Amino acid sequence: MTFKYKKQLGTRTYQFANLAELMAKATPERSGDKLAGLAAESAEQRVVAQMILAELPLKTFLNEAIIPYETDEVTRLIIDTHDKAAFAPIAHLTVGDFRNYLLSDQVDEFTLAALRPGITPEMAAAVSKIMRNQDLILVAKKCRVVTQFRNTIGLQNRLSTRLQPNHPTDAVNGIAASILDGLMFGNGDAVIGINPATDNVSQCCKLLKLMDELIQTYQIPTQSCVLTHVTNTIEAIELGAPVDLIFQSIAGTQAANDSFGINLNILKEAHEAGLSLNRGTVGNNLMYFETGQGSALSADAHHGVDQQTCETRAYAVARQFDPLLVNTVVGFIGPEYLFDGKQIMRAGLEDHFCAKLLGLPMGCDICYTNHAYADQNDMDNLLTLLGVAGCSFIMGIPGSDDIMLNYQTTSFHDALYARKAMGLKPAPEFENWLTELEIFQDLDSVKLNDGLAKPFLHILEH
Image (cartoon, rainbow, N blue to C red; front, side):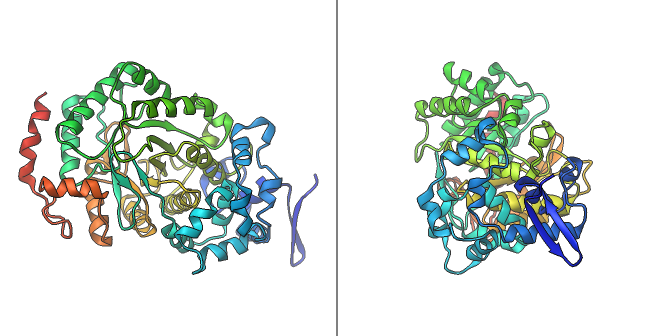
């Protein structure tokens, strides 16, 4: 075997066959890469790989594709849309230089915005691998990504939430009760988004009509979404359903997206269908994407690439369609991919950093499955770290426990904690609505007006 990347350390020579192997060996430890046989064999090997990676020119990622251009449409998208002019200011840098540049005081949100079209996902993934957690937080905080549909998400000192009123039987009363609960705690400005238990077009339309009636009746400046397959949403649009946001799970390789039943052309068709409805009031960002480290590996579609780099490549797919929302469901796939709270926290910070660097309105489903070596204190820690880092939105679920998907995430109360502890507020249009209805009587102290639940009770009686 020919080894392209080598480094002598003492009497031992470390060798890596290609860029994909170097990236995998440089990745902080996680169970998914071990499962795939890609992880570093020792801490020393990992550090050596990181040292080589730090010395690598950024131009390398334009000349050596980790997944061949000829066989993967995500690779073609990355290369064909790369902006050489935007890349020019950093074209002379190594990965290590790029890290230092991003952390420097000379780089602000405007500098980062100008660079975005010139940064490939692989460059973002590479620099994240040689950064400490505090580096990921500091740079992400400097990134500003603002999107709009019926309100404005991503402004400084704002934290939005997805109100997630899932129900194991899609019972309308149960869903409506959860929506009411969430609204009374100031949740739902990112989206009111339901994962349907019965995933078909008819049920999708029924849930869309429920949410649309509530939003229109109370003039709530937010948007709704049923998290069904994108082809179901296209059909719902054709049937005249009140579709706001179009959802799809995406991944970072063509083969992984094939396993989801999607490709770039299907996403383009959905995006155009959504735009044709013209339902946004302050903007036209209408796509909602979810991602998560390990999805390509679970589909046996990773091509020998580590799960974090595969994840970051999914962001190229997302930014092609100007989404309103993107989030990593960071601990959802399970301990086979992210073993414990420490690995989940690291992955959440990496995903948020890489997505923001690439210009995405990144949120995080701060979560874990019940068989992972993690608990709610780990989620509190990640919530706090992401709040400091400027995360665009988080999930809001009754009691932190999704009773339909059976995993643990963040609650309505957790959003209140984050906003109070870090001085964050909802989207401005939603904040005004909360104040006008006196759901929040005092946004600085977040006092809840429980009496205002009464006008909403007729929703439960439908």
